[in-house]
Amino acid sequence: MYKTTLIDINKSKWSVYDPDNILDYDRSNFDLSILKFSGDIRPREGLLQFEHQDTSHIIDFGFYGDEVKFEGVWVVYVINGMLKEDAWEHPLERIESKNFLDGIENVQLMFNKYT
Image (tube, rainbow, N blue to C red; front, top):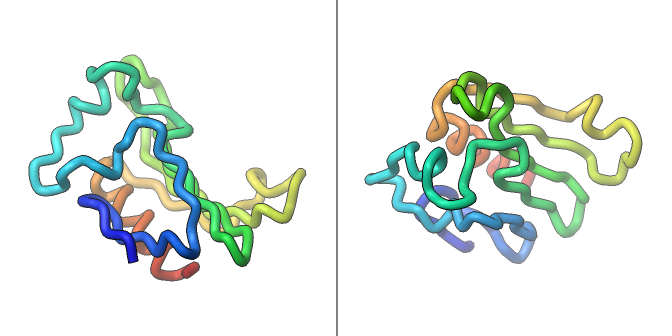
């Protein structure tokens, strides 16, 4: 088990796409402004993605809405990566939250469910 400060991940089962090193941030002192104003870290659709090594399930986490005004929702998608055409149009799961940390909790729930 690989424990980040935000999410517990079984890295033998999941490959991790985290270009902004979001998983390295300390949850207890998390300030959303780091996502909004720090370098290239911006609320956007492709913030985090995880692919299960055995089942091809993909857990995707990002922001959907107006990234400039920061009006929108955080969304967790779970898709079947084996389906090339309709995977994103017909996700296995789609969970919205208004709060970033609630979204992170939803990612953790999906790890617990699909691992």
